[in-house]
Length: 308
Ligand code: NCD
Image 1: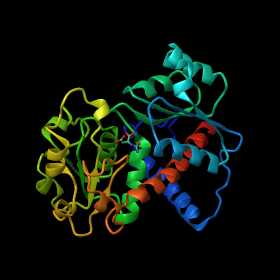
Image 2: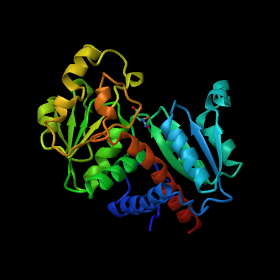
Image 3: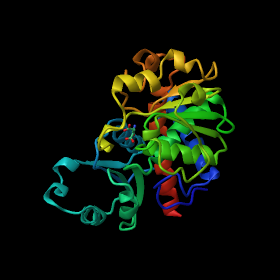
Image 4: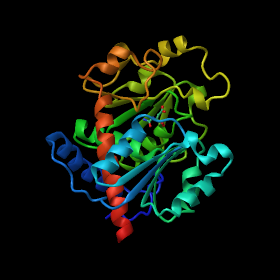
């Protein structure tokens, strides 16, 4: 069974851990579709969400996931917190820890901040995205969406396209997809490629035609301007022309390829708006749906592992 105290990244998990989370999430996804309420396995537990960075879907989905499982969920309003008065991350964490939460969900702009925090508290910590480092629940919900649509999560060719260098989503996905023995291709301008792809051998190209060839899955990423200092691309128009996914570029992939995007999307920058909404190819809404199921599963397994 799942035997980790925290969910800080995909790194450190094994294929069995990933399958355990996805299998559990699958039952939650099916129950939600059938309108069957889940057992309140987190009843009596306190979940605190601390988002030091903006978020729509991740925060909402962690909140809904906790509530569906019966937890008492509290969203810290970080903009109004004592962080603004100069309190350090660790002091804030220790203060919250003294209130005995069971689950702490943290998003932070600095890579490694969530790991540091996890070492200071005695509850389960879930990383909801730290800097450019990891976003494990995103990679898991992507994996579940792929597994449902493709019927398997191995021996697929997945093209991850766009701003890879600044993306924790790309990093967590690369690790997960590699672990499950898929072929990963990174496609984007050289300026937006990571300096060292340390975890696995991913192929890299700055040519969409080459990168999308025979792909089963095309995963688009947002240009993360908030993490760029200086110009990484000549212009958004130029970027869209070369790297923006439209029907023509998608035709380089397999005929049954699916299109993914973690959101938020910049329509007309990395993806054509019509294609993003085309339910014949785009699984973007299903990704959001699976997000709730995966977070329910992850929190349940962590809570179980704590109880021993
Ligand atoms: C991503 C994130 O925050 O890392 N979004 C998300 O969690 N759905 C990707 C992004 O911000 O572009």
